Image: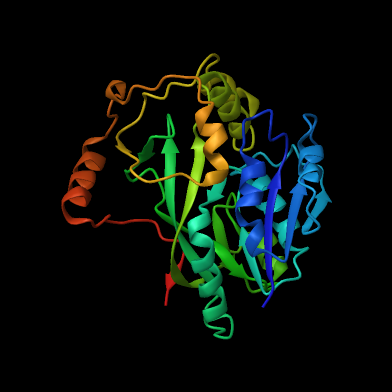
Length: 297
């Protein structure tokens, strides 16, 4: 059984991505790690080379600035890396995601366990979505609780939407022409993705948000909807305190946090409907109408 890690990145330092930690967090599991490195100007490629691992294979890419709808460029870049894998399993880690070292043995065991069962097309991981600081996570419907991060290396499996997950398609042509595909048959994995998408200094977070929106919207929309200055972390519904331990690779970054975040200042921006659904979830543990991009078997 051979495991291939894969990811993509462009100007990771400019926008505050812990991409080196992301790669290193699953590197011990992988026989190879393929990373599509976009045309960067901040030393991102040099830093990946600097990891000095014979497992890492860089695929140089140029991002298509015209793909400004629904984050398609992210799926495109994930697929570039995916197409270069030689392993049986592909382990996708995004540039702001890190796996805890305590979960690696369990993930290897699960891949080994399901390797010969062709019904199993992927593994479903839990998510912790950090917000505002490294001490708080999102716990409402706006955050996905689970997503596929490990898939079989099959030509019919492609990155879905803005690379949020994966689906199976009848053909590459169908995928390129907008076929919705089919949800993958997956097994749950008792392992967690530490997702650090919303943990940056407020000014850098706003810079990253504006950049991210540029792959979803045109310049006019950005001018009207994305303000300058610092990101307002308090425009949020609800957060929960994180009680666990972070991956060892993140300790230095976490220790360097230089901005304040006061959870008491959040504005609890719920609609009436979402507030009711959230109360039901808190009392029952059931998230009514939860989006699930997978089929559990």
